[in-house]
Image (cartoon, rainbow, N blue to C red; front, side, top):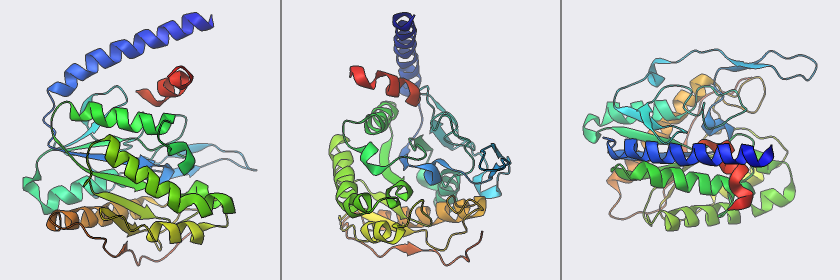
Length: 302
């Protein structure tokens, strides 16, 4: 039974790659952005837990702010390696097994198009997976390989890789060891991505934490804010409204975050001749209460 299941999976993957890469070749995407990290990048805006007594029963409320509405000039790279018109939730077929809601991606893309209509078609490559520790994003691991593979496939249809948007770290606040190692692991990750995508000057726009799972949030935030790589920009999410779970930022916060990420990206376009570290973009908002499965299953055989 198990060999038969693997045969089905392998056949499906081979068919998907053959069919979808043909689709990529016809893409009109001009500007490609990678969205990676964990749940706040994947998007939990509007996700409500109806469970009681510690039980989890989550649903998305389906509310889409005007800043996150679909636009024919905004596409997303699906789990099936196809460019399709982007709509919330962007990670619905990537962050599997989770209830996805509004993230920063659509607000980011709409904000860029509003401020620079001549930029052309924007293509987003969702890769974020909720609940992941940065050690799980190490080069050679399933998550890292998944991100690189999807990005390389997206680029086959043409277009320019414009930036990596990264929001992760909540899972690294649980232990002091992870918090202490975070800066080293984060710098290594960014360097590896730029090297493996052959894009040494690619802007990396990271988000420093607004919330945490464990007690070491400030140590991880300090590591994020202390990254001094020349092409890394930091958007500080501290102060963005956090939902009732005290972990995921709200829908309106995701809209604000997308706009802050757009601000940071457009700054890189005016300073590309000399890429120097810049001060974090901060928010003063008041506080309030392909499939990845196939990659995961096949990882022991790669």
